[in-house]
Length: 104
DNA sequence: AAACTGACTTCTC
DNA sequence: GGAGAAGCCAGTT
Image 1 (cartoon, protein in one colour):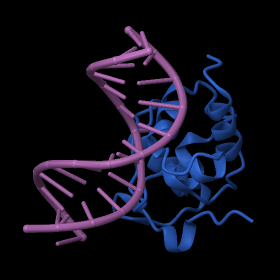
Image 2 (cartoon, rainbow, N blue to C red):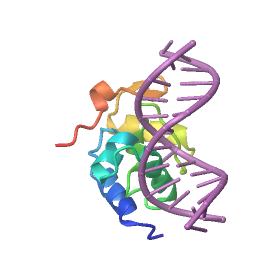
Image 3 (cartoon, rainbow, N blue to C red):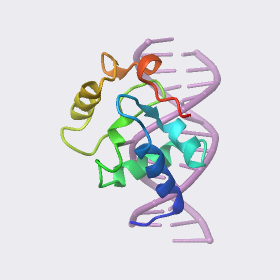
Image 4 (cartoon, protein in one colour):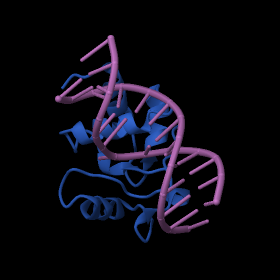
């Protein structure tokens, strides 16, 4: 669905996340031009249908905790994919200190 | 147009 | 650090 330009910006930002790194919803919202709209970002991700065009699995919570994921087995599958890309995990959360995406 | 919902974030206990 | 409550933003109904 077209929804709005905001969603398009969100998709663009998420698509810009390099492999082996993860970004938080707040970070994406800020880069998308709507700081604080972390929830809105998550909504777009859920609506997203192109997981390969928009790696929503590289999007995690502020603490690195894996949230949502409407594909595969959900969280478990998401976690597995990230680990495969080289993302460091702390139990059920991502180690943002090592795998946190830092936009240029 | 108003109200509700949601893959969030932050504060306080 | 974990549990509970309040606040924000955009989208959907």
